Image 1 (cartoon, helix red, strand yellow):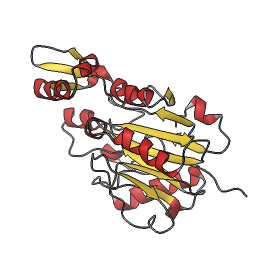
Image 2 (tube, one colour; image 1 turned 90 degrees about the horizontal axis):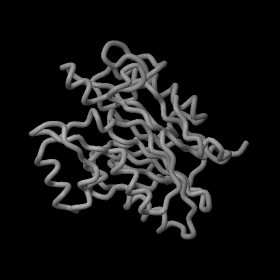
Image 3 (cartoon, helix red, strand yellow; image 1 turned 180 degrees about the horizontal axis):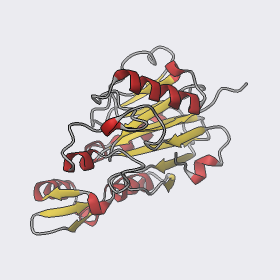
Amino acid sequence: MFYSRKLKKIKQIKHCFFSRKNGFSKGIYKGLNCGKGSKDKKRNVRKNLDYVAKKMDVKRDKLILMHQTHSNKVVEIKKNNYKKKIFADAMITKMKGFALGVVTADCVPIILYDSKNEIVGCIHAGWKGAFLGIIKNTISKIKKISSGNKFFACIGPCIGKKNYEVDKNFYKMFLAKSRNNKIYFSNKNKTKKLFDLRKFVTKKLIKANINIDQVDRDTFAEKGNFFSYRRSCKLKQKDYGRCISSICMPELN
């Protein structure tokens, strides 16, 4: 379990970037696999999510997960939709006692809090979502609800640059959007580049004037702590687990 130093100091919220440790899954999913979309036994995933809800101090039906699609879609969680299937890559809520969760296996989990208006949010920022504007859209949606925001955000564990190989076409696509994107790449060899996803996402939050900190861990490198899609592919495993990151505003007793 990993925490943001800044968010930890804020009494109004509870958060955690869960590792793969603990949990009930076996084999390639060993530990706390929270991926409903994985091929793990449903019973084990359910038990893992029960464990997370307990740690977050919310009822199990109030631990809200998304059906993530690498989009730029943001959904506000309210009383009338929290039981429905949510197709999105970011969620925000003003409701207390609801934990928002994002699952990742190399992509970037971001959790954020607007302390002025008491709004929490979580973002699934893979390269595609970040490229399509998921971060900007999330902040815009919060600003539409309330103004005079005071944002805090933490960027969680994700794949590190030294382990994120991409091809020339990927590189060209980023440069076509903006020549400035060159700073996120370095050469690996004649055909491959290395991409700094963490830096790319960080710059988006800095641009939005958000107070941020990092849980700077590499999901690919730390096999004992995190699931990794790319590592699973490299090991020729049939599937992979997902870690969960969550934030909530506890109900006042």
